[in-house]
Image (cartoon, rainbow, N blue to C red; front, side, top):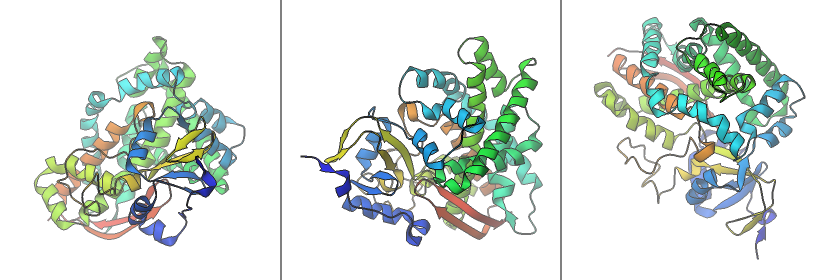
Amino acid sequence: MLKAVENLPVVDFATKAYRTQPFPILADYARQWRVARSTRGVEIFDYDLCRASIVDSRLGTGHPKLMEVLGLPDGSALDYKRKSISFYNRGETRRKLRRPIVRLLGEGASEEFRQDIRRIVSQAIDAVAIDRPVDLIAEFCDRIPSSLYCKWVNAPESDWKFVAKTSHVVQQVHTRDSSRTDDIVEGFEKLLSYIDERIESRRGDLGDDLISDLIRETHAGNLTHDEVRTWLVKLAEANTDNSSHQIAIAVIELASRPDVWDRLAKDPSLAPAAIREVMRFHPRSISTSREALVDMDMAGYAVPAGTPVFANFGAAHWNSRRYPKPEWFNIDRPVRPLHLNFGGGVFSCVGRFVVTIEVEETVAMLAKEFPGLRLEKANFDHSPMFTSVTDLIATLKPN
């Protein structure tokens, strides 16, 4: 007989220990239990269950329930969210929405952005001060993905500060904190107005950029105008905030290990391996949310339909059966198994290739130009969902 979820062990993500050092705690949970529960729902800690849950057809998106938790009011922000791919479970609608964007941001297509990303990073390096401590979040982590987004929507690159700010604001939907709802709504309203202006300015003058390619998809009958608008908002919502924090995490983890930073400075080709290890060891996405679509048996527990379920990547990545000595940071680890940060199947992150390139190029060029980079201040905050970098100050020493 299956046990009730009420009988699951209870874990607490609100402790100071978790918020500062979550991964040893998650690894310890995983050694004790395959699944547990918290105030937000059922928590998966077992590597195999985490990996399976990403593609399990019985688990759907947890986004609609998240909007309920936030109390998002009727209006343009909630209307956008309801039309976003985040609200659709597996099925033809989700597949239809993904097809054009997966093609335009697939692995090969994303490689075409590498030169643009290198140019943006190079410009940031040329503009940065080297005679005093520098806020790397403002000068690099926010600037690189936001500037690329400006190119995607044919906007002046000077708009990057607006894009970064609004992306950080609207991503607070994942805090599950209703006290932030008003700010989130205002952020989405500003972002929606901005995208409407970009679409209108480009509609009659298509060019060689992502917004033009998406508008062409409406001509081909693959997307509607509303779907193009929704995708452009979604890309701003998710890409900039997540990319910024992942770049910052990578700089901290690599630059705080002088031997590793020195290897990168001498051999930038090591950047992909280094970034893979960063994303395993200290991921931006600590967990991902799902909702049980049907009554389920999960590790011997009866999980009712409608139950929020969370796959904890932070626990899976520190599983010693899959990653020997997981507490050791080692850029020479085998490529397999891959980290789980970007999900899988029809729920995989459509921007994963671009994000990875942004992190690789930023780290590689910073290490090459500033082999003597010294961290002055670096702080993290960890929620059950994400790693956030709250401070990143460094002195950029050329040698």
